[in-house]
Image 1 (cartoon, rainbow, N blue to C red):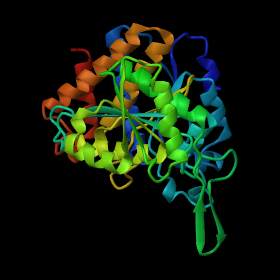
Image 2 (image 1 turned 90 degrees about the vertical axis):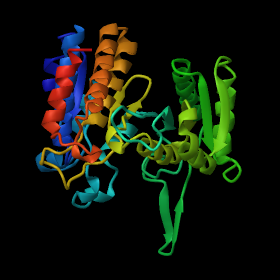
Image 3 (image 1 turned 45 degrees about the vertical axis):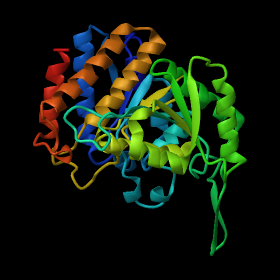
Image 4 (image 1 turned 135 degrees about the vertical axis):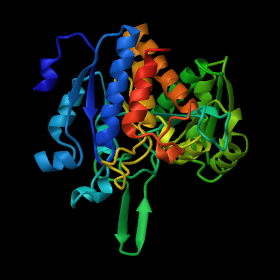
Amino acid sequence: MEAASTADSGNPRIGLLRGDGIGHEIVPATRDVVDAALAAAGAPDVDWIELPIGFDAITAHGTPTPESTLAALADLDAWILGPHDSAAYPEPFASQITPGGAIRKRFDLYANIRPACALPGVRAVSPHMDLVIVRENTEGFYADRNMFAGVGEFMPTPDIAMAVGVVTRPACERIAHTAFGLALQRRKRVTIVHKANVLSATTGLFRDVCREVGRRYPDVTLDDEHVDAMAAHLVRRGDEYDVVVTENMFGDILSDLAGELSGSLGTAASLNASATKAMAQAAHGAAPDIAGRNRANPTALILSAAMLLDRLATVGRDHRLADAAARIRSAVERTLAAGIATADLGGLASTHAFTETVVARVHRR
């Protein structure tokens, strides 16, 4: 009912799902930063629609991913998802698709866009890294998302486990267009990552379709790497790459690696998107060991929300949303450069203190 009550305001309508663990701290922190940035940019207010998911939803609805939550999301412009601790759910929920996975599958969020950018004041193995990994999010070997029904893993006997990998031309084409379109806004270079020397049919198809799409973007330089070589290159010379496009599992692994090389998963933003929907979701987990202790780092989710505002600015052609996003990024960078950081980054700031500092700085872009 809450979703319907704000439908006529004309403001962007964003779902807010706290999730589990530190989600109850970093999601409200992110909302506060977004509200402050929108006000500073003169942008319309957001109508926040809070929806249950995770442990709270199990308690209230008997499932971590209520159908009522999914139905409400369909009527919203976008949403912010906090981390979930699905491994700790009681059975049968612990063995089922995760809340984030259920949302990605329901809304066909086929593009997982993960920047890895070194930030001032944060120690990094690759201090000049500034790349984006564009990960195909619906296929590959990931068993929770590569089948219409059920999962892509099965055991014909107790001693044999098998997995089905799925790669289709349409999925490769749309993720390739996402990568090349992003490259046009950056340094105009795309690197395809595959393992076609071994997985010649599946990742070979991925590589070849990306090459075909690349020919439609003559202004973008294109190259490709095997995934094992790419892992080494990221460590040795990660600052040389711009946009990296790859399939699901490779993208998951490489984006975590790049996040750590550029500073920390605690600063690694992430956006899941389709042609019509988008979800901000930090790359890290729920960190239940520090939940409720005012020690969580909200940086990754705050920067993910900035990506979400950029996306809404493009779709709605409202430059004020893009201004708010730029204010958020600048405020986070200046806060970290001043040595104000949470404990995971070597600082002394609490979650609240870090958030309050970022909120103050969005007004002084």
